[in-house]
Length: 291
Image (cartoon, rainbow, N blue to C red):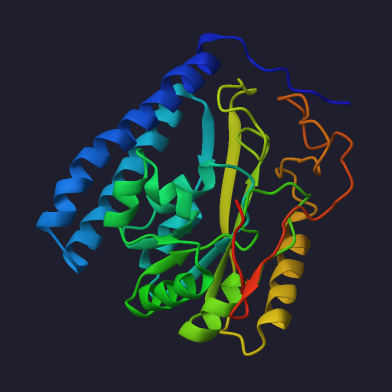
């Protein structure tokens, strides 16, 4: 078995013990700004300011990770993403950093997130200013998402509903198809490939990974608005499985009940059998993320 041992050098510890707190402080500082701005700039002007601020802040964080040499980002394909309007952006979800990377590359991106995070001291005020959408109740989530897309935003939605536990993706939920159908909007797929399980589902926040991490993003197929949500969801999931299954970079992730691998394990190591890890709740024809 080929194994990458976690680095115990200064680089790894700076990434975790400086980089992660820096992100937290940056989010907290944005909270202090977002609270009064929401009152002073109501409506679309405040939303535009909030989304642009989040995009710039996350770009700064990505640059910090590059400076430390922690990540080798290949996000050139995302430069074209900045031109997208009125579209649902649907990526796979190997790790927590995925939303950071995508939001960093679009100044007018709305995001569906767990409702509990909308009340989080670090994220809540900024998310509300930016017009982000809580995932409950599902009927309101779909209505708000459709409105955001019709207003010209790019809507970030992870079809798995949570970070991947299965290889290469979890079972997809119906949310993306339901929103695309009601908004009559296309679904633009984004394929994320990474050679580390860092910050995957179950990874402790301050567990030091092997570095550097190679992280590549590419734009995938654009799907037309569906007429049959279930058929569309199955086709979307099959597409991601086919595109990611043989990827040389995709990190292997354990199925539920199996301990996380050694932080440095390479994709060539033996893999746990694929198994869906998402419970899907249906309401108004759509599943919504559970966490």
